[in-house]
Length: 394
Image (tube, rainbow, N blue to C red; front, top):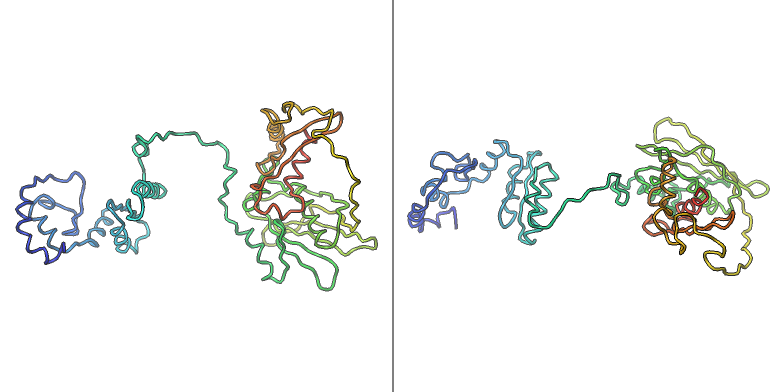
C-alpha cells in the first residue's frame, strides 16, 4: 500500500507523529527517491518530506541514474534481500563499468551472504578494511609461499581436450594421456601418432625443468616409444637414442609426431620422434630415433622372495636405519638436483627410500593417484620410471 492512494487515510496522523521527530542534516550526500536528485534544503529534514515519501511514487530509476551521474560505480544493497539489486542492474543495464551487489539473501545465512558480498566487491577492486572485517574472529595473518603454487592448476585444458576429437578429422583416437591421435595409412604398414605438448596444459611435463627451461624427460619419450610399439604389434623397444633435448616453449605449444616405419626383413621398425613449434612455416626437428621389434617376451625365471631391504644393505646417507625418510634424505637429493640446475616438481618426487650394498643401489618409488588423473593410461608412468633412475645420481 505504501506510495499509493491507499495511504491517504493515515497521512495526517503520520504527519503529526513525524513532526515530533528531530531531524539532522545528513553527513554524506543522499539521493532522494522522492525527487530522484541529491537531497537538499528541507529534504529528509521535515515532516512534509516524509509524508510525501509515504504517499508519492518512488523515483528509483531516477535516483540510481543520479548516483551513476555523480560518479558512483559500486552500488550495494544493505537490506533483507536482493530485489533492489536486480532493479538497479536493470536501470543501469547499458553501463558496463558498474558493480551492483546485495549483502543479504533470503535463502542464505547472513554471515556467509555478507562475506560473499564483500569478497565479490574486493575482487572487483573495491578497498576493504579487512582488519575491521575480521576483528574479534580470531583470524590471523599467515605468510604465503614465495614459490609458485604447484598443487592447484588454473590453466584451461583446451589443448588436452582437443586430443579427444581426433575422430572428427578422420584420425583414430587413442586412450593414452600423451598421444592425441593415430593415423594408419591404408596402403602402407606404417603408423603416425600426433599430439600437442604444452607446459601450461600438461602438469606432468611442466614439473621437469633444466636450467630454467621445461625439458621433456627421456622417460616420456620412452613411454611414447612403448605405446607406438603396442599400436603396431611390437613388443620391445630395442633401441632409443635422444638426438636433441625436447624443450617446451614458455608460451604456446609444440606439435609432436611419432613415426613408425614399415617392418624390415627381421621384423624391426624404425621409430622417429619429431617436433616443431605451433607456428606457421616452422621446421621439424628430430629429437629421438630408435628401433622397435616383435621380439617374444621371455618371462624371468622364478625368483625366490627375499627380505626387503636385501641383507647387507645400508641406508643411504640421510635415511634412518629403518629406511624411513628423514631430514636430508630424498629431499636432500632433490635439493642437490636443483642446485645442479635440474628441478623436479612434485609429480617426479616419487623416491621414498634408498639403500646401498657395495656397488648396488636399492630404492623404493611410489606412484600416487594424485600425480595424474590419467595415470592408468600409461604403459610405464614416466614419473615412476624417472624416480627409479634418480638413485643413480645420488
